Image 1 (cartoon, one colour):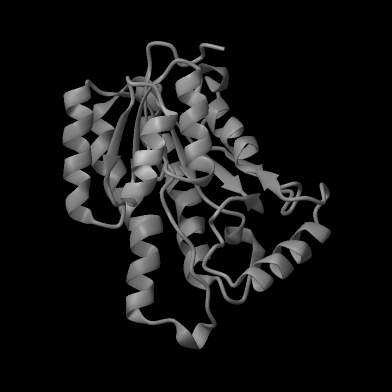
Image 2: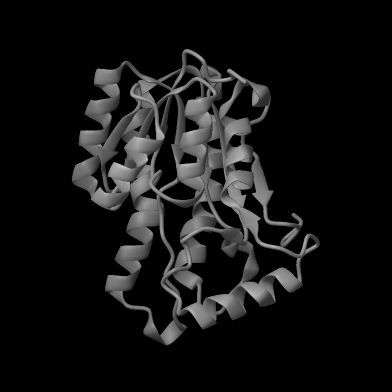
Length: 246
């Protein structure tokens, strides 16, 4: 398939998990990919997985000073046909352990960073471009230890709808990917036995009782970024095996 032939797509947080799977797939479908991440070893590994036409940048969504660097890189490249704001990470803990530092860390990476990136990159989106934001089923699950992360990811769903309204006159579409239990390194902060027990409990309650793959989630993001979704905007697409069924 050549759905992205002649198109330039920026993917943040592309060095692992869903972002990595998406970068590889979208590049294989013809896009010139700009991919970002924070870990130098993973960035080097990503370069080996993408064609020479791709640009791989060290960029941290949580650092406001990196936003201008990213915008300058996009401007030099000549604008974007697709933007996938995917970077983020999770931390969990009980209510009484929430601190100002934890708030700034989680909200900064998962909400403030993408919002500032979008503000800086909107002018570099070509008319007819597509934007995808990565949220999470945590926004709906009501997990007692995930309040900060759930707040950030729930806000991203609301933000996407506002951006869809704001940019529709330019035929720019904005949609949200809502992954559930996907087999990535996203929960590596958990001890292995805790992670295994958590995933077993979650999958036992799914309509499709298994963990999804990064490639399955990336396929939905690729659809939303492509012209196949040309009349889809302001929507949220869950890839969760029926976890929330909204």
